[in-house]
Each structure stands twice: as C-alpha cells, then as structure tokens.
Length: 377
Ligand code: CA
Image (tube, rainbow, N blue to C red):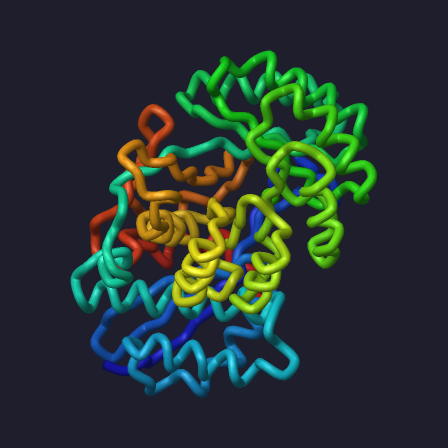
C-alpha cells in the first residue's frame, strides 16, 4: 500500500454571537483537515489544532516526501517529517500540521487492520468516558456571570457532571462568575476554571487563593505558556491544582514541564502535540512522573474521535478497583460544522460518551459536506 494523494482543507464558518476568551474573539470557527488517500482506496482523515491557513500550507509542503511511502510505517514517517522541520520546527504550528498527518495515517492503519486505533496502540482500559462541558466564554454585550449562570443550568440539565468556565477577564469579575457557577452546580459536580493565560503570576495566585473556596477541580492555563517558572510558582503559591498543555508541542517540551513539576494535570491535544504517535509517548512520560493526563480537545468530530481513541489508552492513574474517572473535554460553544462534516457513532448519554470500536477513527467524513465551508486560499 502506498500514499497516493494528500489534500488539506481550510474550513471556516461565521459564528453568531461572537464570544471571547481572555485574549481572543471568536467570530468564526475554522479548521484545517487533511485527507490522505492510498493506492488501495483506503482513506484517512486528520485535523490540526491552530491557524488553519498556516497548517494547510505546511501540510501541503510535506506532500512530496510522503507520496509513494507505505502509510503503515507510521513511526518512520513521523521521524522523517519531524527531521525535515527540526532545525526551525520542534514546536508550535509545525507540530500541529504534523499531528494532522499522523492522525490520518493511524486512521488508515485502523481501516487496514480492521481495528479501532486503541486496539493497535495496545488495547483499551475503558469503553466509555465521562464528559465535561467546556463553555462559559464571555458573550459581547452581556454580563459574564449571567451567561455563566444560564450555561451551567443548561449543562446540568443535559446530564454533564462537570463544567469548565472561562476566566481571565479580571479577578473581581471572574470571582463573581465562579461563585455564580458553583451556586448552580450541585455538590459533587465538578467545576473547572480556564484563564487562557489571561493573568500575570500575581493575579493568578490571588485568584487561586480566593476561588479555592468554591471547590474548583483545576485552574487551567493561569499564565503565559512560555513562562514555565511562573507556572511552577502559581502551583506552589495557591491551593488549586494547575493544568496546562494545549499550547505545548512535542515530547521534549512536555518532558521539561514534567521534570520541573509545572502542572498537576497535563493537557496535551492530539491535534497539536504531534499526533497519536507522540501523545502515546507523552502519556507514558506523565505516567512515569505520576502526573494526571486529561487531554485538551477542540475542533471538529475528527479531533473528538481521535481524542476518544487516546482516552481509551490512558492507564488508570493509579491502578485500583474504583478507577479514577478520566474526563473528555466537550466544547459546547457554537461551531457550525463541528458535526456537519460526516457521521460518527459517538453519542452523549447522561454525561458519558462511548469510545468507538469501529476501524480507525470510527468516523465517515463526507467531502461534499465540507464544500460550503471551504476557504480557497
Ligand atoms: Ca483551555
């Protein structure tokens, strides 16, 4: 079997009303998808986290050395791509683009061997995972605590047992939103906060000390992702567990984070950290360091499907009869084409999602359904 074609698609759709994290306004949802076709007719799909147009151009620049290669030689292909970009790559968007290619190769491998990807990776520890709702962004023109209250009620009614809200808009405003969210959620329902690196170290420490009263499971991206020493200091000087990982790439970067004890919870994104090949190594490193892994998930049903395969293979932390539940991040914000590009067998029931046992990623992407969203750049 040989790789015959590699195509990359930049998708975009307007998003009304626009919403904001601490540092960016989402008035459109975008994605970069990759489709790899083999001479046997098998096709694999992948998705890259991050800027779609740049991801697309990197993927297309990697086409030539991949055409004609055996798509089942995933580790050698991973190293070959990484080595081509290593000198000025190693991190960032180059690893995001590589993640999409790697994901598509695993999809092909699963279809070739007629097995879900988790079976090829050594087998699943679990068949389903609990999902938490990601939302609570700021909606322009509305009070954050009001929209947080309405969203938490909605997620609770939908059966979610955990909710993550956005903060990083200012300590006072954020504490009001956190207090409001906790007042809606019952005891035992999880509440997480995500600052999208909207604080400096002193603000993050102050927020953590005051928000601790509201039973917060984790404090995500408190400070800028480059400032790993500040991460460590936030972890040491306030009581809420610190989480991060969606902006880190490659196992050497994650190893540094683990070695320096910068987080309590590691959040690699399979569409950004280097793909399925690399996240398996990052999971092993976290297991060795005794650090919990809760993958970051953002994007379309392709990344959702890949993340579910990854969640299947994360070892219990620690092994024991009553498994410490693993959490799937389920973005609840408006995304016009998240599920509109194909079919999957995923369904959410009582806040839990079943992991696909179908070959590969377990999804069918229909290229015709992409057409309304394609940006021709
Ligand atoms: Ca986040």
